[in-house]
Length: 275
Image (tube, rainbow, N blue to C red; front, side, top):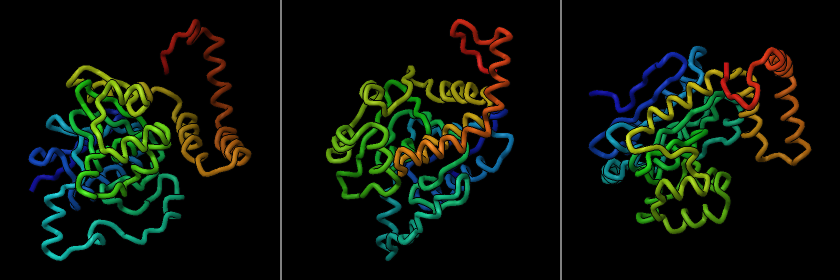
């Protein structure tokens, strides 16, 4: 049986593609494990700088495979089949380390490098949670988000109630979480749920282009700033500023090197050509 997750290396960009055409890329237990392992492998690959998370066949991900869930229920399987119900949140403290498997796969990982979602078609329910897990989201203009699982009483347990309010604010998040309504690309861009909206069919290539842009920056500094932004959430201001300094101070030498390039004429007058 073919795997539901494909991994493609495009020099320093790793493209992880979810491919279950018959269920709009919905995720079952096996697929969750494949996604989880694909991103663990990406994080451990020193030659890979940025990942693009893509859904094949015109959709990003329709969430958890409810047909598979119904079959599990008929066979007597409980929620524990999907995930460790008593997982230790402290296991997420190891940056870039192994964290517990989420129902949708990688949702409890905090990777050491960026992941960009290329969103086509539906990114709903758990699929929306996977997109929220990514650092940035590039959407086709006809793509859409939505907490569609609201209709069936399926809870958000892959970070949706945590990442969505942090990303778009409590007011927008409550609107989406409570109503489960469809959020199309223009509104997603306006509220900050999407970072880029591109013509239909171009999300994958646009995300890869954005990933290549990130690959061209000094990586240690970029990733230190990225991790500082994630780690500041649960800290008081003074501690957040301290951890920012602790992460950034080792990269000051990179800044001096960059200052030398600027003095030599690179990047003048607002030109933005990372190298």
